[in-house]
Length: 194
Image 1 (cartoon, helix red, strand yellow):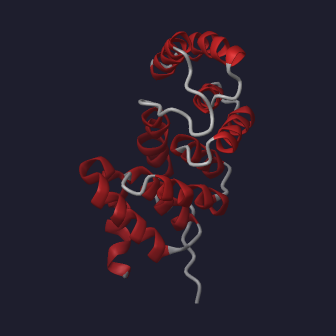
Image 2 (tube, one colour):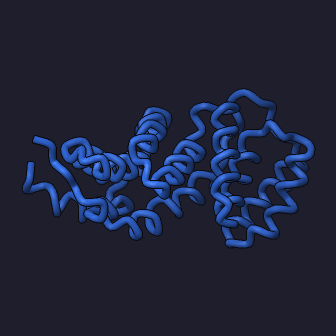
């Protein structure tokens, strides 16, 4: 017998506002050097930092100028493409956002921010099965980060995979402690069903 879980069992709005939206910003708070590309020079790093600060301040128009400067010199920089994806998402241009994040994954297949962001975009499109594939990769890339586990719990829940969802929610809570409190309603609601 298949367990069908209604689409609205997990507070979707809360998930995006408290988990995935901050996750976009948190993932690029300290960008690591790219795996398969040279590190940007000091001047370009400074421009990328300014773009990052503008995105954090929710000023995408300001970020665009800085991103353009870096992109002209280094169009294959994974972090620049990632931030262009964030910029596009802030402009509600989800097609371009996804394209940038997919490009990041061709340049740096284990880029956690791109994996989580692309999964978030797929969840917005009600494609939890596809999102789960990226989230599983994010869990493999950063096994001690609570965010991929929490997002994977939501993706599994939307697919009706209750046991897997609970397992991922428990793991998120274990890793994130108070920060992962977003998964507690899921656990409180479904823990007695186990």
